[in-house]
Image (cartoon, rainbow, N blue to C red; front, side):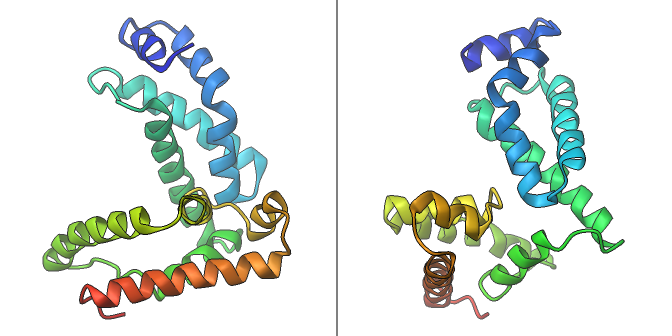
Length: 185
């Protein structure tokens, strides 16, 4: 079923919207949550919460890209659950991702920094657009979807060490681009 048809089911308040969303995007959403949380049961909980949030949000919202919209929701839910559970020291996977990016992206804390955050988004988007297609996909899969280096290496048929080096090169490139734009890291 096409996205517009699924959204129309939500607008009609048809419960089929949930089942059609699960058919089309369930695996995608589960993979995002599992990459962050590492535990199937927690990932499944996040996916179910995503369906509930979609049900409550459409209407009034009508997302242009349903898959990306759902991906953002499940990712935020998974990160919130990870943060809650991380206080209990249950997860280590997400900590590794955040540590890798720590040297590249400043954290907005003040109003001024919040405005800089909007500018940073523009810089990041321009940087991503400047990358080769494959590098852009790798970066987004690693740092937005949370894919493991081992998984990416296996899919590209290279050693995990080589993939880790490639990801390091991308982070180094990002850091240089940010410094060129005046961001001190």
